[in-house]
Length: 175
Image (cartoon, rainbow, N blue to C red; front, side, top):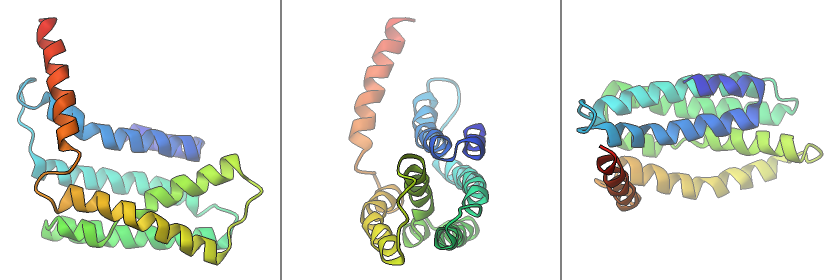
């Protein structure tokens, strides 16, 4: 959560840090589960994680509403509202497939747009370029949401299990 505050100071790098923190936390929780004296509860994690995601997105929204380009401000607000509706429905009904139906394009749009402002400030996308860019982002994001919220085991779980087994070997070696 504290990493999200970096977005206010440095929008692109702050979002990079916040997204890294958001994607690492589940692995830290899983590694600690059973070995550090607590039980990992996926259902609790999902609710807490989605609330923290909205917190991060609210901070990014605050920055995004200050974009000079009016189209970028509208896209930022629209994508935030779209995802917030999905998260709200998920929190009320607890159905994970809702998060697939309302994919989080907001975070990636914000990251790409602030990266463009940071590294290519002379580029000013048109409406068609915004539409193309968002449709280009949709396929990988749907794959991610499908793997995370629909499949019983996300496709990246074997990689995680390999990393976990190496970590545990190192951990037990030093005990």
